Length: 329
Image (cartoon, rainbow, N blue to C red):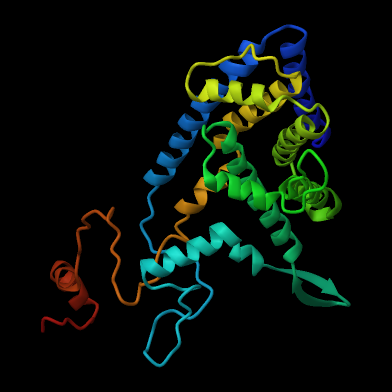
């Protein structure tokens, strides 16, 4: 049920968009109102989540470190794993954001013949890297639909992505990679017993939604052969706030656009928000300089201290009676 329910929801969303745009003629709704509403919800939700994270109290230095801290001059420091300055923090964060370094270094522990063995777990890293980089390239490629004239950098990315062109229309490498990566991430949750046990519907819904977005986009290019000129007319109308939702475009475009809108509206309130949350992780965005600099909790309030001299002055007579020595004597 935790797989069937999210799959059914995504299929129902796609069906609603198809029927609404084709049979009911609600192209203004699915081509203009829903996309604008989704963008507003995405921006507001993103800002709300970021502000909440930014207001969270972090009174202690809690960087996650895996190497030697900066210490004596003759002890080699692990500057990437254990940075002592913010330059090293930026480098560590870039490696994490762009190449998922912690996931690359992740190992799995399993039992082999009554013994624990540590093995490599690189398939997850490779699948995650392929998915995220493919999605980034796909998003950048789509800028040709929103910019006129098309910038040179978009043409360069598009040319590199179609380097292995086979026939017409152009076959993009990222189209294949993103489908393969999403399929792998889905099968991993289904095949691996411990992951299948802990996975919930909210873990499968983003996968199916992303697959719906990708597959509808691929269908537009290779199956329905949507008129690109009409698509650009529609997208340019959205960007310039002069929408032309009545453009003669196949219903599959409105399915694709509606699923993208649902993804944008859902993004800030889902696990997908780790895209912004990684920058606010106090275990990663802090330099480990606790030996070189004393960090005082800025939220500390004044505490009344009762030192030993005051304690002895208050209870001195009672201490004398029981034979306890007094410092004052």
